[in-house]
Structure formats: structure tokens, C-alpha cells
Length: 317
Image (cartoon, rainbow, N blue to C red; front, side):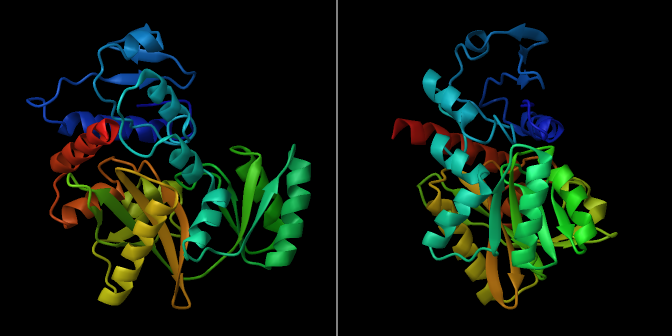
């Protein structure tokens, strides 16, 4: 848990919640924290990677964002031949890259919002490119880092005067940006879980309703329950729920996920658009996937057991 990303604190909360809920009669648990500057710490001691991973049978990766979720850490564990939860190297890298993952989603028949990819060496070039993109897409528009999670660095632009601040915010996190046509609609998320027998289960759909002046499910809203209402199962027709669940399974398959994932959608003008996939969903007390699993009758301890079991069996296969 931990890691060098902008989601360091979220990861520590995920790790803490997992540690509190793992069955200690079933597992010998070793807590490893990776600091913001990349040091590996176990039992208060700084260790080499080799020392930290010695005699480890399976890793439960609780890190989010760059390094932990983008294929880097997955590649490290592959080199040690240690089973781990979540997507493999390629799927993790694809899932973190919003632009590339959307290309794959469209190949599988999923709809994505109109968007333009921007890559720049500095903020001035980024600003010019984003201004051109906004002209093509028309306002309102969304500017976001191409490869970050938890909605960090995301801004909705309703006036051209807001573009400069939006670019500056997104550019803090990534030199690759995505400029997207803003679609007004209802926000939903849907988790996918691979069961012990290999079946892929789509969990109940959650509707996310931001409140208290939050325009969308931003970073603060994601980790503060007072900032939004989360309705699970969503108060929607069975037909729409099934369509969103089918889309979530397709997204999971499109980038080659394994174990579990969670996809975010917006329903606008009666069309379902996928925004992104989370290949390593949060597991904090406020996280959406554990809540959806509970709504499906899967308690958190059972969810952790299923994820760990699939991680081990995937390596064997």
C-alpha cells in the first residue's frame, strides 16, 4: 500500500481496510508500505525489494494510480513470479491510459464521449492545443489528465476564460491530456467480479448523484460521503441496469482485465457512454465496489477471499 502516486493516502486507506478485514485464521499477513519517494517499509524498517518480498506467496496490491495501477508494479511482481490481484501488466497499462482504452472500447461496440488527445512538452503548448480542441468540441468541455485516477486534475469548462486554469490543473499530473465533450446526464458505475469457478459476475449498478455544489464525481466527492449520494442498486429500469452491466463486462474483457474491475458511465440522451475503467478499484470503507458486492450478498471478507483465490488460480493457470 502507499506508493508514489497522487493517490497515496487513498491507497493507505485501502490497505488499512483490507488489513482489518482479512481472516487472520486463514492468512499470515505481512503489511508493506511503499513511501512517496519509493522506499519499501515493513515493520517500521526500510528494506530492499528483494527483502520485502521474500517468502511472500501472494501480493494483495492496494496501490492506486501511477506505479501501482499502470502496469509498473505488476511487471515487478511478474519478474519475481509472485501472484497478485487485479489486471496484468498490459491490461493495467491500457486501463490507465484513457485515450487508448477508449479505442479498444469502441472496437467492442461501446460508446465513448467525443474527445481529442493532447500531448505537450510545456503548459503553453498544452494551452494552445486545448484551446483548439475546445473550438472543435464546443463548450461545455472537460479537461483531464490522460493517465490518472480518482478524477484528480479534472475540470469542467463552461467559459473560455476557464481553459487556462483547467490546463494548469491537469498538467500538474500528466503531459498527456484528454479534452472531452461534456455530456449532461446521470452518472453510474458498475463493478465486475470473477468468481471462483471463473464466471464473470456484474455487480449491482450504482448511481452517483453529486451534491453540495459538486458538478461531478470529483476527487473530494469520491472520498467524502457528504459530497454525493450513492444509490445501490440504482433506481433505474431493469433493462437499463442490465445494459450497463453488459457494458461493464465488455469493458473488462476489452482490455483483458482479470479478477475484478469497475467501470464508470454516463447516460446522456438515452445513450450509455463509458468514461473509464478502474482495473484496481478502491477498497476503502467508502469505496463503491465493496458496497456493490455487499448489495449482491457478498460480504467484504468473502470478497477479499474471492479476489485472493482468483489471483492464485490465475497464476497456476
